[in-house]
Length: 221
Image (cartoon, rainbow, N blue to C red; front, side, top):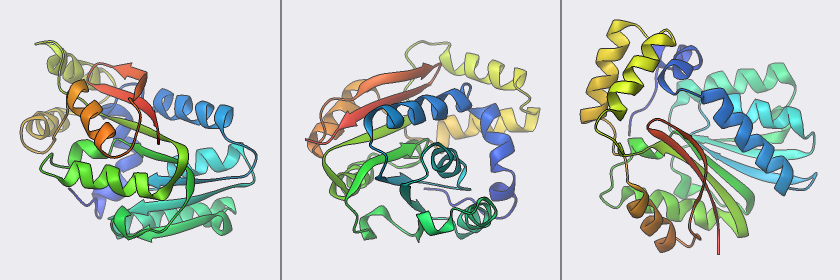
C-alpha cells in the first residue's frame, strides 16, 4: 500500500477530483447518510483520512461528532492536523499514524473511502476489514468506496477520457494507466460480498457508482 509523501501529499486534494469522477458527490452522499443514521453525538472512524478533508466536512455538519483519523502517511496527517487547528476542531479529532489494527475504538460508523483498492487481496484486504469490524459497535455502518473491476471492456478507457476532461495531464493519464495495471487491486462485487461476510458485515448496499468506482454501505452484524 502506498504512502503519500511530500508533493504527493501536498497536491493530493487538487489531483484526486480529476482521478475520481464524482469525488465530491461521493463524500456528500456519504455525509448525508451519516446525518440520517447517526445521532447528534457519535464517534466516526475514518480509515485513510489523508489530509483530513472528509473529517472537516463531517465536523462542520455536526458539532458534537468526534473522529479518529487514521493514516499511514505522516505527511498527510501533518496537513490534516494543521487543517483541524485552523478550523478549531482539533479537540474532536484523534490522529492515528499506523495500521487500523492498532486502534482500540468502539465507533458508531466507519469510513473507508478510496483506500482498499491499494491493498492486495492476499489476506491483507480481509485483515483491514476485520480490523474495521473490530473497531465498530454492533450494527455500526461501514461506508466503503473503491475502484472495482471493470464491468465492460471499455470502462477503463472511459475513465481515462473523463479524467482528461476533468483536467488530468497526459503524464497523469500515463501514470493512471500504469496504476490500473500494476498498483491497484480491485475486486468484483462477488468477492467484496464474500470478504464482508467473512469479517462480520451484512451484504453491502450500493449507494454510489460512476464508471469504475463504487460505494457501498454495510452493517456490522
